[in-house]
Length: 103
Image 1: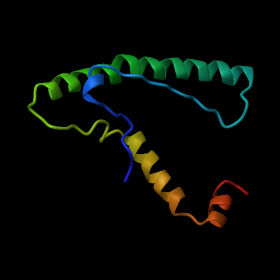
Image 2: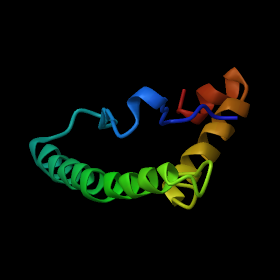
Image 3: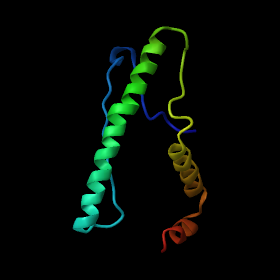
């Protein structure tokens, strides 16, 4: 039901390109901006040092031929909540969607 977040092709094996965007609901105060910047730095570190390392290990395992595919991030709660929320939003009528966002 969802398109893959990561696509690969034989000519791009072992390469990756990532764009991370961080959004805030309202323009932050200076204090909020400072706290957000620290959070964004931590998230960048986690993606770079943990997620990419895991992805590289998975890529090496896939290249071994022992498995034909892998589901990456299946047990990450954040992704599951995002998809449940998205499903709920997509199921709402236009009128209920406006109500959901306080309109």
